[in-house]
Image (cartoon, rainbow, N blue to C red; front, side, top):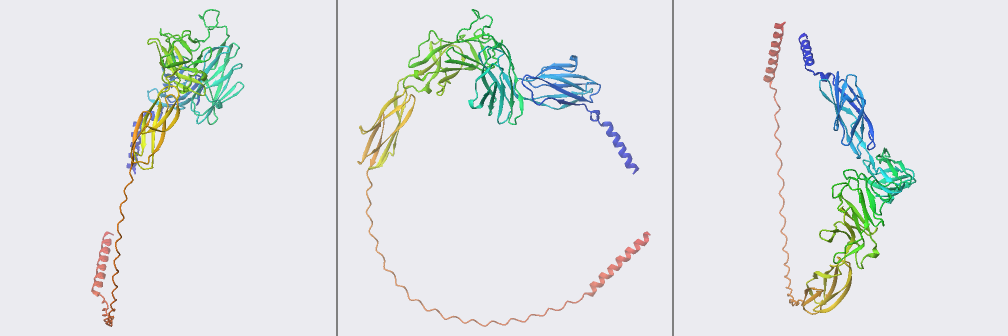
Length: 570
Protein backbone atom coordinates (compact mmCIF):
# COMPACT_ATOMS: atom_id res chain seq x y z
CA UNK A 1 0.00 0.00 0.00
CA UNK A 2 2.79 2.41 0.88
CA UNK A 3 4.42 1.75 -2.47
CA UNK A 4 1.11 2.42 -4.41
CA UNK A 5 0.59 5.69 -2.52
CA UNK A 6 4.04 6.95 -3.53
CA UNK A 7 3.31 6.23 -7.25
CA UNK A 8 0.06 8.27 -7.13
CA UNK A 9 1.79 11.27 -5.51
CA UNK A 10 4.57 11.27 -8.13
CA UNK A 11 2.00 11.14 -11.03
CA UNK A 12 0.08 14.13 -9.64
CA UNK A 13 3.26 16.21 -9.31
CA UNK A 14 4.42 15.36 -12.87
CA UNK A 15 0.95 16.27 -14.30
CA UNK A 16 0.99 19.60 -12.49
CA UNK A 17 4.37 20.44 -13.98
CA UNK A 18 3.27 19.78 -17.57
CA UNK A 19 -0.25 21.39 -17.48
CA UNK A 20 0.04 24.75 -19.41
CA UNK A 21 -0.87 27.94 -17.64
CA UNK A 22 -3.61 28.69 -20.23
CA UNK A 23 -5.49 25.54 -19.23
CA UNK A 24 -5.58 26.80 -15.71
CA UNK A 25 -6.58 30.40 -16.50
CA UNK A 26 -7.72 31.00 -20.15
CA UNK A 27 -8.76 34.45 -21.38
CA UNK A 28 -12.36 34.66 -22.57
CA UNK A 29 -14.62 37.16 -24.30
CA UNK A 30 -18.29 37.53 -25.18
CA UNK A 31 -19.96 39.69 -27.86
CA UNK A 32 -23.48 41.12 -27.44
CA UNK A 33 -25.31 42.93 -30.27
CA UNK A 34 -28.82 43.19 -31.78
CA UNK A 35 -30.09 40.41 -34.06
CA UNK A 36 -31.16 42.89 -36.77
CA UNK A 37 -30.50 46.51 -37.71
CA UNK A 38 -31.85 48.93 -40.28
CA UNK A 39 -29.69 49.58 -43.33
CA UNK A 40 -27.16 52.36 -42.74
CA UNK A 41 -28.12 52.64 -39.07
CA UNK A 42 -25.57 52.97 -36.24
CA UNK A 43 -25.70 50.30 -33.53
CA UNK A 44 -23.59 49.23 -30.52
CA UNK A 45 -21.59 46.06 -30.01
CA UNK A 46 -20.77 45.21 -26.35
CA UNK A 47 -17.64 43.21 -25.50
CA UNK A 48 -17.02 41.56 -22.09
CA UNK A 49 -13.61 39.98 -21.40
CA UNK A 50 -11.80 38.35 -18.47
CA UNK A 51 -8.60 36.55 -17.41
CA UNK A 52 -6.35 38.20 -20.00
CA UNK A 53 -3.75 39.31 -17.44
CA UNK A 54 -2.19 42.72 -17.00
CA UNK A 55 -2.94 43.65 -20.61
CA UNK A 56 -4.52 42.13 -23.73
CA UNK A 57 -6.05 42.84 -27.10
CA UNK A 58 -9.44 42.21 -28.75
CA UNK A 59 -9.34 41.92 -32.57
CA UNK A 60 -12.77 42.26 -34.24
CA UNK A 61 -13.40 41.63 -37.96
CA UNK A 62 -16.43 43.56 -39.28
CA UNK A 63 -18.55 42.26 -42.20
CA UNK A 64 -18.16 43.82 -45.63
CA UNK A 65 -20.16 47.05 -45.92
CA UNK A 66 -20.01 47.77 -42.16
CA UNK A 67 -17.81 50.56 -40.83
CA UNK A 68 -16.38 51.40 -37.39
CA UNK A 69 -17.56 54.67 -35.81
CA UNK A 70 -16.26 54.95 -32.22
CA UNK A 71 -15.85 53.11 -28.90
CA UNK A 72 -15.88 53.72 -25.14
CA UNK A 73 -12.09 53.10 -25.05
CA UNK A 74 -9.66 55.91 -25.70
CA UNK A 75 -8.77 56.66 -29.31
CA UNK A 76 -5.16 55.65 -28.64
CA UNK A 77 -6.35 52.16 -27.69
CA UNK A 78 -8.08 51.57 -31.06
CA UNK A 79 -6.44 50.72 -34.38
CA UNK A 80 -8.64 50.43 -37.52
CA UNK A 81 -7.31 48.61 -40.59
CA UNK A 82 -10.17 48.25 -43.10
CA UNK A 83 -12.64 45.77 -41.64
CA UNK A 84 -10.27 44.77 -38.80
CA UNK A 85 -10.50 46.79 -35.55
CA UNK A 86 -7.95 46.18 -32.75
CA UNK A 87 -8.76 47.22 -29.16
CA UNK A 88 -5.83 47.32 -26.71
CA UNK A 89 -6.92 46.53 -23.12
CA UNK A 90 -5.43 47.24 -19.73
CA UNK A 91 -6.19 45.22 -16.63
CA UNK A 92 -9.39 47.11 -15.74
CA UNK A 93 -10.85 47.14 -19.27
CA UNK A 94 -13.11 44.13 -18.82
CA UNK A 95 -16.11 45.72 -20.58
CA UNK A 96 -16.30 48.14 -23.48
CA UNK A 97 -18.66 49.11 -26.34
CA UNK A 98 -17.98 50.09 -29.91
CA UNK A 99 -20.37 51.64 -32.48
CA UNK A 100 -20.74 50.43 -36.08
CA UNK A 101 -22.65 51.66 -39.14
CA UNK A 102 -24.59 48.85 -40.86
CA UNK A 103 -24.37 48.01 -44.54
CA UNK A 104 -26.88 49.44 -47.00
CA UNK A 105 -27.40 46.02 -48.63
CA UNK A 106 -30.03 43.66 -47.15
CA UNK A 107 -28.43 40.35 -46.10
CA UNK A 108 -27.24 38.29 -43.13
CA UNK A 109 -23.77 39.34 -41.92
CA UNK A 110 -21.26 37.62 -39.62
CA UNK A 111 -18.89 39.17 -37.05
CA UNK A 112 -15.78 37.35 -35.80
CA UNK A 113 -13.10 38.17 -33.24
CA UNK A 114 -10.39 36.93 -30.88
CA UNK A 115 -8.89 38.00 -27.55
CA UNK A 116 -5.12 37.82 -26.96
CA UNK A 117 -3.91 37.60 -23.35
CA UNK A 118 -0.61 38.94 -21.98
CA UNK A 119 1.15 35.77 -23.21
CA UNK A 120 -0.28 36.37 -26.73
CA UNK A 121 -2.42 33.25 -26.44
CA UNK A 122 -5.57 33.62 -28.55
CA UNK A 123 -9.14 32.69 -27.66
CA UNK A 124 -12.27 33.11 -29.81
CA UNK A 125 -14.84 35.73 -28.84
CA UNK A 126 -18.11 33.90 -28.22
CA UNK A 127 -21.70 35.16 -28.04
CA UNK A 128 -23.57 36.92 -30.90
CA UNK A 129 -21.99 36.56 -34.32
CA UNK A 130 -24.73 37.27 -36.88
CA UNK A 131 -26.89 40.29 -37.64
CA UNK A 132 -29.57 40.81 -40.31
CA UNK A 133 -30.10 43.92 -42.43
CA UNK A 134 -33.69 43.19 -43.54
CA UNK A 135 -34.72 46.11 -45.79
CA UNK A 136 -33.37 49.30 -47.33
CA UNK A 137 -34.93 52.33 -49.02
CA UNK A 138 -33.16 54.33 -51.76
CA UNK A 139 -34.42 57.66 -53.09
CA UNK A 140 -33.03 61.02 -54.28
CA UNK A 141 -31.81 63.52 -51.73
CA UNK A 142 -33.94 66.28 -53.26
CA UNK A 143 -36.74 66.76 -55.75
CA UNK A 144 -38.70 69.61 -57.32
CA UNK A 145 -42.07 70.38 -55.76
CA UNK A 146 -44.87 68.41 -57.42
CA UNK A 147 -42.49 66.21 -59.42
CA UNK A 148 -42.72 62.43 -59.65
CA UNK A 149 -39.77 60.36 -58.43
CA UNK A 150 -38.97 56.70 -57.78
CA UNK A 151 -38.22 54.98 -54.48
CA UNK A 152 -36.39 51.62 -54.52
CA UNK A 153 -37.03 49.04 -51.79
CA UNK A 154 -34.75 46.01 -51.27
CA UNK A 155 -35.69 43.26 -48.81
CA UNK A 156 -34.16 40.06 -47.46
CA UNK A 157 -35.10 36.90 -45.58
CA UNK A 158 -38.78 37.58 -44.87
CA UNK A 159 -39.89 34.01 -45.65
CA UNK A 160 -42.55 32.72 -48.02
CA UNK A 161 -44.40 36.03 -47.91
CA UNK A 162 -44.10 39.41 -46.24
CA UNK A 163 -45.26 43.00 -46.33
CA UNK A 164 -43.56 46.38 -46.58
CA UNK A 165 -45.56 49.20 -44.97
CA UNK A 166 -44.39 52.67 -46.05
CA UNK A 167 -45.63 55.90 -44.48
CA UNK A 168 -45.36 58.85 -46.88
CA UNK A 169 -44.82 62.39 -45.59
CA UNK A 170 -47.78 64.77 -45.59
CA UNK A 171 -48.40 66.21 -49.05
CA UNK A 172 -46.82 63.27 -50.89
CA UNK A 173 -49.03 60.88 -52.87
CA UNK A 174 -48.56 57.35 -54.18
CA UNK A 175 -48.67 56.92 -58.00
CA UNK A 176 -47.72 53.36 -58.97
CA UNK A 177 -45.25 50.53 -58.39
CA UNK A 178 -43.54 47.67 -60.20
CA UNK A 179 -45.63 45.19 -58.18
CA UNK A 180 -49.07 44.04 -59.40
CA UNK A 181 -51.93 46.37 -58.46
CA UNK A 182 -53.49 43.60 -56.33
CA UNK A 183 -50.36 43.57 -54.16
CA UNK A 184 -50.69 47.27 -53.19
CA UNK A 185 -53.10 48.77 -50.66
CA UNK A 186 -53.20 52.56 -50.19
CA UNK A 187 -54.77 54.02 -47.05
CA UNK A 188 -54.07 57.75 -47.00
CA UNK A 189 -50.34 58.21 -46.41
CA UNK A 190 -49.83 54.51 -45.60
CA UNK A 191 -48.99 52.23 -48.53
CA UNK A 192 -48.83 48.46 -47.97
CA UNK A 193 -46.92 46.27 -50.43
CA UNK A 194 -47.54 42.51 -50.17
CA UNK A 195 -44.53 40.44 -51.23
CA UNK A 196 -44.61 36.86 -52.52
CA UNK A 197 -40.93 36.16 -53.03
CA UNK A 198 -39.97 39.54 -54.54
CA UNK A 199 -36.77 40.95 -53.05
CA UNK A 200 -36.70 44.28 -54.90
CA UNK A 201 -39.37 46.65 -56.16
CA UNK A 202 -39.87 50.36 -56.87
CA UNK A 203 -42.76 52.70 -56.36
CA UNK A 204 -43.41 56.18 -57.75
CA UNK A 205 -44.46 59.12 -55.60
CA UNK A 206 -45.54 62.66 -56.37
CA UNK A 207 -43.66 65.14 -54.19
CA UNK A 208 -45.35 67.68 -51.99
CA UNK A 209 -45.86 71.21 -53.29
CA UNK A 210 -44.43 72.51 -50.02
CA UNK A 211 -40.69 73.19 -50.01
CA UNK A 212 -38.66 71.79 -47.12
CA UNK A 213 -37.28 68.53 -45.69
CA UNK A 214 -39.67 65.59 -45.44
CA UNK A 215 -39.23 62.21 -43.72
CA UNK A 216 -40.25 58.73 -44.86
CA UNK A 217 -40.63 55.73 -42.55
CA UNK A 218 -41.45 52.08 -43.05
CA UNK A 219 -41.32 48.55 -41.71
CA UNK A 220 -40.91 45.06 -43.13
CA UNK A 221 -43.14 42.33 -41.68
CA UNK A 222 -41.87 38.79 -42.20
CA UNK A 223 -43.90 35.59 -42.48
CA UNK A 224 -44.07 35.40 -38.65
CA UNK A 225 -45.32 39.02 -38.46
CA UNK A 226 -42.05 40.14 -36.84
CA UNK A 227 -41.40 43.78 -37.74
CA UNK A 228 -38.08 45.23 -38.92
CA UNK A 229 -37.35 48.86 -39.68
CA UNK A 230 -36.72 49.83 -43.30
CA UNK A 231 -33.37 51.61 -43.28
CA UNK A 232 -31.43 53.59 -45.85
CA UNK A 233 -32.64 56.96 -47.11
CA UNK A 234 -35.32 58.51 -44.92
CA UNK A 235 -35.27 62.25 -45.75
CA UNK A 236 -35.82 64.17 -48.96
CA UNK A 237 -35.65 67.89 -49.66
CA UNK A 238 -38.40 69.45 -51.77
CA UNK A 239 -37.22 72.48 -53.74
CA UNK A 240 -39.55 75.21 -54.94
CA UNK A 241 -40.22 75.07 -58.73
CA UNK A 242 -38.30 78.29 -59.30
CA UNK A 243 -35.09 76.81 -57.89
CA UNK A 244 -33.36 75.64 -61.07
CA UNK A 245 -29.86 74.08 -60.90
CA UNK A 246 -27.04 76.57 -60.98
CA UNK A 247 -25.73 77.25 -64.45
CA UNK A 248 -28.99 76.36 -66.23
CA UNK A 249 -29.39 79.97 -67.28
CA UNK A 250 -32.36 81.91 -68.60
CA UNK A 251 -35.15 82.68 -66.21
CA UNK A 252 -34.67 79.40 -64.33
CA UNK A 253 -37.30 77.55 -66.35
CA UNK A 254 -36.79 74.00 -67.61
CA UNK A 255 -36.95 73.26 -71.36
CA UNK A 256 -39.60 70.71 -72.46
CA UNK A 257 -38.36 67.13 -72.32
CA UNK A 258 -35.38 68.08 -70.14
CA UNK A 259 -34.52 66.26 -66.91
CA UNK A 260 -31.68 67.62 -64.77
CA UNK A 261 -29.52 65.01 -63.06
CA UNK A 262 -27.65 67.02 -60.42
CA UNK A 263 -29.50 65.28 -57.59
CA UNK A 264 -29.42 61.81 -59.15
CA UNK A 265 -25.85 61.27 -60.41
CA UNK A 266 -22.66 61.39 -58.35
CA UNK A 267 -19.29 62.66 -59.55
CA UNK A 268 -18.35 59.25 -61.03
CA UNK A 269 -21.48 59.16 -63.22
CA UNK A 270 -23.30 56.64 -61.02
CA UNK A 271 -27.05 57.05 -60.59
CA UNK A 272 -27.67 56.99 -56.84
CA UNK A 273 -31.39 56.28 -57.36
CA UNK A 274 -33.58 54.91 -60.13
CA UNK A 275 -34.72 57.65 -62.52
CA UNK A 276 -37.50 57.80 -65.15
CA UNK A 277 -37.10 60.32 -67.98
CA UNK A 278 -40.01 61.16 -70.29
CA UNK A 279 -40.61 63.19 -73.41
CA UNK A 280 -43.00 66.11 -73.06
CA UNK A 281 -45.82 64.16 -74.75
CA UNK A 282 -45.20 61.05 -72.60
CA UNK A 283 -44.77 58.81 -75.67
CA UNK A 284 -41.05 58.12 -75.19
CA UNK A 285 -39.79 57.03 -71.76
CA UNK A 286 -36.37 56.05 -70.41
CA UNK A 287 -35.93 54.01 -67.22
CA UNK A 288 -32.48 54.19 -65.61
CA UNK A 289 -31.85 51.79 -62.70
CA UNK A 290 -29.90 52.75 -59.62
CA UNK A 291 -26.09 52.16 -59.83
CA UNK A 292 -26.06 52.61 -63.62
CA UNK A 293 -22.88 54.36 -64.79
CA UNK A 294 -23.49 57.07 -67.41
CA UNK A 295 -20.74 59.10 -69.09
CA UNK A 296 -20.59 61.68 -71.85
CA UNK A 297 -18.18 61.43 -74.78
CA UNK A 298 -15.65 63.52 -72.81
CA UNK A 299 -15.77 61.03 -69.91
CA UNK A 300 -17.68 63.40 -67.62
CA UNK A 301 -20.94 62.67 -65.82
CA UNK A 302 -24.12 63.95 -67.50
CA UNK A 303 -25.95 66.90 -65.96
CA UNK A 304 -29.18 66.54 -67.94
CA UNK A 305 -31.04 64.31 -70.37
CA UNK A 306 -33.22 65.69 -73.17
CA UNK A 307 -35.92 63.63 -74.92
CA UNK A 308 -37.65 65.55 -77.74
CA UNK A 309 -39.31 64.89 -81.10
CA UNK A 310 -36.69 65.13 -83.84
CA UNK A 311 -37.00 68.27 -85.90
CA UNK A 312 -35.23 66.65 -88.91
CA UNK A 313 -36.15 62.95 -88.84
CA UNK A 314 -34.43 60.58 -91.24
CA UNK A 315 -36.51 58.57 -93.71
CA UNK A 316 -37.16 54.88 -93.10
CA UNK A 317 -35.18 52.13 -94.83
CA UNK A 318 -36.66 50.43 -97.92
CA UNK A 319 -39.62 48.11 -97.11
CA UNK A 320 -39.79 49.62 -93.61
CA UNK A 321 -42.22 52.11 -92.06
CA UNK A 322 -41.73 54.46 -89.11
CA UNK A 323 -44.62 54.24 -86.65
CA UNK A 324 -45.30 57.58 -84.97
CA UNK A 325 -42.56 60.15 -84.36
CA UNK A 326 -38.76 59.95 -84.31
CA UNK A 327 -37.32 61.00 -80.93
CA UNK A 328 -33.91 62.54 -80.39
CA UNK A 329 -32.20 61.56 -77.11
CA UNK A 330 -29.30 63.72 -76.05
CA UNK A 331 -26.56 64.46 -75.17
CA UNK A 332 -25.64 62.56 -78.30
CA UNK A 333 -23.21 59.70 -77.59
CA UNK A 334 -24.11 59.45 -73.88
CA UNK A 335 -23.42 55.86 -72.75
CA UNK A 336 -24.87 53.62 -70.05
CA UNK A 337 -23.43 50.61 -68.26
CA UNK A 338 -25.39 48.41 -67.89
CA UNK A 339 -28.05 49.08 -70.50
CA UNK A 340 -31.14 51.13 -69.68
CA UNK A 341 -34.69 50.52 -70.93
CA UNK A 342 -36.25 52.65 -73.69
CA UNK A 343 -40.05 52.45 -73.94
CA UNK A 344 -42.33 53.76 -76.69
CA UNK A 345 -46.14 53.96 -76.66
CA UNK A 346 -47.67 53.31 -80.10
CA UNK A 347 -51.14 53.89 -81.51
CA UNK A 348 -52.59 50.72 -83.16
CA UNK A 349 -54.59 52.93 -85.55
CA UNK A 350 -51.30 54.13 -87.08
CA UNK A 351 -50.13 50.63 -88.05
CA UNK A 352 -50.04 49.67 -91.77
CA UNK A 353 -52.93 47.44 -92.84
CA UNK A 354 -52.10 43.78 -92.46
CA UNK A 355 -49.20 44.34 -90.03
CA UNK A 356 -48.88 42.01 -87.08
CA UNK A 357 -48.30 44.15 -83.95
CA UNK A 358 -45.91 41.56 -82.55
CA UNK A 359 -43.50 42.37 -85.41
CA UNK A 360 -42.94 45.97 -84.26
CA UNK A 361 -39.41 46.90 -83.17
CA UNK A 362 -37.31 49.87 -82.08
CA UNK A 363 -34.50 51.08 -84.37
CA UNK A 364 -31.75 53.67 -83.95
CA UNK A 365 -30.14 55.97 -86.50
CA UNK A 366 -26.51 55.07 -87.25
CA UNK A 367 -24.87 58.28 -88.42
CA UNK A 368 -21.77 56.50 -89.76
CA UNK A 369 -23.69 54.19 -92.12
CA UNK A 370 -26.55 56.67 -92.58
CA UNK A 371 -29.19 53.99 -92.06
CA UNK A 372 -31.61 52.76 -89.43
CA UNK A 373 -30.43 49.74 -87.42
CA UNK A 374 -32.93 47.33 -85.88
CA UNK A 375 -32.32 46.77 -82.16
CA UNK A 376 -32.36 43.15 -81.06
CA UNK A 377 -34.45 42.29 -78.04
CA UNK A 378 -37.43 44.55 -78.77
CA UNK A 379 -40.42 43.45 -76.68
CA UNK A 380 -43.99 44.25 -77.77
CA UNK A 381 -46.74 44.39 -75.14
CA UNK A 382 -50.05 44.38 -77.03
CA UNK A 383 -52.06 44.90 -73.83
CA UNK A 384 -50.35 48.24 -73.08
CA UNK A 385 -49.46 49.17 -76.69
CA UNK A 386 -45.80 49.57 -75.81
CA UNK A 387 -42.48 48.52 -77.33
CA UNK A 388 -39.38 48.35 -75.11
CA UNK A 389 -35.74 47.54 -75.70
CA UNK A 390 -32.43 47.89 -73.80
CA UNK A 391 -30.10 50.62 -75.09
CA UNK A 392 -26.58 51.62 -74.11
CA UNK A 393 -26.10 54.93 -75.96
CA UNK A 394 -28.01 58.01 -77.18
CA UNK A 395 -28.97 58.94 -80.74
CA UNK A 396 -32.31 59.10 -82.61
CA UNK A 397 -34.83 56.28 -81.97
CA UNK A 398 -38.23 55.29 -83.36
CA UNK A 399 -40.74 52.45 -83.50
CA UNK A 400 -40.64 50.78 -86.91
CA UNK A 401 -42.07 47.83 -88.82
CA UNK A 402 -40.94 45.88 -91.85
CA UNK A 403 -43.58 46.21 -94.60
CA UNK A 404 -42.68 43.78 -97.38
CA UNK A 405 -45.94 42.72 -99.11
CA UNK A 406 -47.36 39.23 -98.63
CA UNK A 407 -45.57 36.55 -100.68
CA UNK A 408 -46.64 32.90 -100.56
CA UNK A 409 -44.47 29.81 -100.91
CA UNK A 410 -45.17 26.07 -100.73
CA UNK A 411 -43.11 23.29 -99.18
CA UNK A 412 -43.10 19.85 -97.54
CA UNK A 413 -45.72 18.04 -99.66
CA UNK A 414 -46.94 14.79 -98.10
CA UNK A 415 -48.91 12.03 -99.91
CA UNK A 416 -50.35 9.25 -97.77
CA UNK A 417 -50.48 6.49 -98.80
CA UNK A 418 -48.38 6.57 -101.96
CA UNK A 419 -50.09 3.42 -103.30
CA UNK A 420 -53.82 2.63 -102.87
CA UNK A 421 -56.49 0.31 -104.11
CA UNK A 422 -59.19 1.44 -106.51
CA UNK A 423 -61.74 3.73 -104.83
CA UNK A 424 -59.60 4.39 -101.72
CA UNK A 425 -58.76 7.95 -100.45
CA UNK A 426 -55.33 9.55 -100.77
CA UNK A 427 -54.50 12.49 -98.43
CA UNK A 428 -52.29 15.25 -99.86
CA UNK A 429 -50.97 18.04 -97.60
CA UNK A 430 -48.47 20.87 -97.95
CA UNK A 431 -47.20 23.88 -95.97
CA UNK A 432 -48.10 27.36 -97.22
CA UNK A 433 -45.95 30.22 -95.87
CA UNK A 434 -46.24 34.00 -96.07
CA UNK A 435 -42.64 35.19 -96.39
CA UNK A 436 -43.68 38.85 -96.46
CA UNK A 437 -44.25 41.15 -93.48
CA UNK A 438 -47.88 42.11 -94.15
CA UNK A 439 -50.83 39.73 -93.99
CA UNK A 440 -52.47 38.58 -97.23
CA UNK A 441 -54.92 36.13 -98.82
CA UNK A 442 -54.15 33.38 -101.29
CA UNK A 443 -56.27 30.80 -103.13
CA UNK A 444 -54.58 27.42 -102.87
CA UNK A 445 -55.52 25.25 -105.89
CA UNK A 446 -55.28 21.43 -105.84
CA UNK A 447 -54.76 19.65 -109.18
CA UNK A 448 -54.64 16.00 -110.21
CA UNK A 449 -53.07 15.46 -113.66
CA UNK A 450 -53.52 19.22 -114.31
CA UNK A 451 -57.23 19.01 -113.53
CA UNK A 452 -58.42 21.35 -110.75
CA UNK A 453 -60.01 19.15 -108.11
CA UNK A 454 -60.43 21.64 -105.22
CA UNK A 455 -59.44 25.15 -104.03
CA UNK A 456 -59.18 26.80 -100.60
CA UNK A 457 -58.61 30.45 -99.73
CA UNK A 458 -56.36 31.15 -96.73
CA UNK A 459 -55.30 34.35 -94.97
CA UNK A 460 -51.84 34.44 -93.39
CA UNK A 461 -50.14 37.08 -91.29
CA UNK A 462 -46.64 38.15 -92.22
CA UNK A 463 -44.12 35.41 -91.44
CA UNK A 464 -46.86 32.85 -90.64
CA UNK A 465 -47.33 29.32 -92.06
CA UNK A 466 -50.29 26.96 -92.38
CA UNK A 467 -50.83 23.36 -93.49
CA UNK A 468 -53.49 22.76 -96.14
CA UNK A 469 -54.92 19.28 -96.84
CA UNK A 470 -56.89 17.75 -99.76
CA UNK A 471 -58.12 14.23 -100.56
CA UNK A 472 -58.33 12.42 -103.90
CA UNK A 473 -59.98 9.17 -105.04
CA UNK A 474 -59.49 7.35 -108.36
CA UNK A 475 -61.36 4.36 -109.81
CA UNK A 476 -58.86 3.60 -112.57
CA UNK A 477 -55.54 1.83 -112.18
CA UNK A 478 -52.57 4.09 -112.91
CA UNK A 479 -50.12 6.72 -111.60
CA UNK A 480 -51.48 10.22 -110.97
CA UNK A 481 -49.61 13.52 -110.61
CA UNK A 482 -50.81 15.98 -107.97
CA UNK A 483 -49.82 19.64 -107.64
CA UNK A 484 -50.45 22.32 -105.02
CA UNK A 485 -48.96 25.67 -105.90
CA UNK A 486 -45.44 25.01 -107.23
CA UNK A 487 -44.90 21.67 -105.44
CA UNK A 488 -45.95 18.33 -106.88
CA UNK A 489 -45.90 14.59 -106.29
CA UNK A 490 -47.64 11.41 -107.37
CA UNK A 491 -49.58 8.39 -106.14
CA UNK A 492 -50.44 5.04 -107.69
CA UNK A 493 -53.77 3.22 -107.88
CA UNK A 494 -53.04 -0.50 -108.12
CA UNK A 495 -55.16 -3.25 -109.67
CA UNK A 496 -56.99 -5.57 -107.32
CA UNK A 497 -55.29 -9.00 -106.85
CA UNK A 498 -56.57 -12.01 -108.98
CA UNK A 499 -58.37 -14.50 -106.69
CA UNK A 500 -56.83 -17.99 -106.51
CA UNK A 501 -59.10 -21.02 -107.52
CA UNK A 502 -60.54 -22.98 -104.67
CA UNK A 503 -58.94 -26.48 -104.24
CA UNK A 504 -61.14 -29.64 -104.84
CA UNK A 505 -62.29 -31.28 -101.63
CA UNK A 506 -60.34 -34.37 -100.50
CA UNK A 507 -62.57 -37.56 -100.23
CA UNK A 508 -63.20 -38.82 -96.75
CA UNK A 509 -61.66 -42.33 -96.13
CA UNK A 510 -63.93 -45.23 -95.02
CA UNK A 511 -63.65 -45.92 -91.29
CA UNK A 512 -61.75 -49.14 -90.35
CA UNK A 513 -63.79 -51.91 -88.65
CA UNK A 514 -63.45 -52.16 -84.88
CA UNK A 515 -61.82 -55.52 -83.84
CA UNK A 516 -63.69 -57.87 -81.46
CA UNK A 517 -62.36 -57.69 -77.88
CA UNK A 518 -60.31 -60.73 -76.69
CA UNK A 519 -61.53 -62.59 -73.52
CA UNK A 520 -59.69 -61.65 -70.31
CA UNK A 521 -57.44 -64.47 -68.85
CA UNK A 522 -58.50 -66.21 -65.58
CA UNK A 523 -56.85 -64.71 -62.45
CA UNK A 524 -53.84 -66.55 -60.93
CA UNK A 525 -54.60 -67.88 -57.38
CA UNK A 526 -52.68 -66.10 -54.54
CA UNK A 527 -50.38 -68.49 -52.49
CA UNK A 528 -50.94 -68.77 -48.68
CA UNK A 529 -48.48 -66.70 -46.54
CA UNK A 530 -45.62 -68.59 -44.79
CA UNK A 531 -45.61 -68.46 -40.91
CA UNK A 532 -43.08 -65.97 -39.30
CA UNK A 533 -40.18 -67.60 -37.31
CA UNK A 534 -40.34 -67.29 -33.50
CA UNK A 535 -38.03 -64.51 -32.00
CA UNK A 536 -34.66 -65.67 -30.51
CA UNK A 537 -34.53 -64.85 -26.73
CA UNK A 538 -31.86 -62.19 -25.65
CA UNK A 539 -29.60 -63.46 -22.79
CA UNK A 540 -29.75 -61.37 -19.52
CA UNK A 541 -26.65 -59.10 -18.85
CA UNK A 542 -24.10 -60.37 -16.21
CA UNK A 543 -22.51 -58.08 -13.48
CA UNK A 544 -18.76 -57.22 -13.97
CA UNK A 545 -17.55 -57.48 -10.36
CA UNK A 546 -13.90 -57.13 -11.37
CA UNK A 547 -14.48 -53.59 -12.83
CA UNK A 548 -16.43 -52.47 -9.75
CA UNK A 549 -13.70 -53.68 -7.40
CA UNK A 550 -10.97 -51.90 -9.33
CA UNK A 551 -12.84 -48.56 -9.13
CA UNK A 552 -13.34 -48.83 -5.35
CA UNK A 553 -9.67 -49.71 -4.80
CA UNK A 554 -8.46 -46.72 -6.84
CA UNK A 555 -10.66 -44.35 -4.84
CA UNK A 556 -9.19 -45.63 -1.53
CA UNK A 557 -5.61 -45.09 -2.75
CA UNK A 558 -6.31 -41.46 -3.88
CA UNK A 559 -7.96 -40.67 -0.52
CA UNK A 560 -4.94 -41.97 1.47
CA UNK A 561 -2.51 -39.89 -0.61
CA UNK A 562 -4.49 -36.68 0.05
CA UNK A 563 -4.67 -37.45 3.80
CA UNK A 564 -0.87 -37.95 4.15
CA UNK A 565 -0.10 -34.78 2.17
CA UNK A 566 -2.34 -32.61 4.38
CA UNK A 567 -0.92 -34.20 7.56
CA UNK A 568 2.64 -33.56 6.43
CA UNK A 569 2.00 -29.81 5.89
CA UNK A 570 0.43 -29.45 9.31
